[in-house]
Amino acid sequence: SASAISSFVTEPSKEDIGSLETSSSKWSWISEPVGISKVGSLSKTGLLEQINTTADRSDYLWYSLSVDLKDDPGSQTVLHIESLGHALHAFINGKLAGSQAGNSGKAKLNVEIPIALVSGKNKIDLLSLTVGLQ
Image 1 (tube, rainbow, N blue to C red):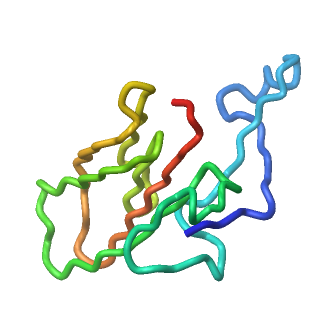
Image 2 (cartoon, rainbow, N blue to C red; image 1 turned 135 degrees about the vertical axis):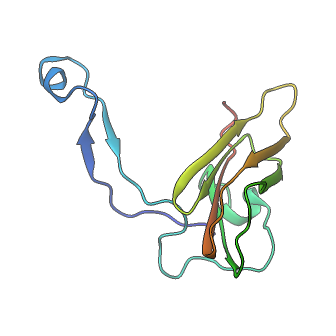
């Protein structure tokens, strides 16, 4: 899904709010929801090629899916991802499960991330980045 968040709310860094006011640095962070958050986002069955999907207007692309498990999935679940993106962040049920970045010698990512799924609905969100930098 290609989506854009139309409004951002900046907040001071939680690490040391007191020193932020006295510092010359004006660092802040933006809270953004995990996954596809825009109503009317593009939905397709299967994976899409990132550059063609975003029309090169964004370096980021969310891939989201949900899996409904009737039984206990056990503890040996591994998420295997092969990507041509430069970096990838995997989220399971809204929590970061793992990340991987390529490099100039090997841009293709081949990632295996141990994950914990639960009985019922599980949401898997992948954020693919093609920014050219790690």
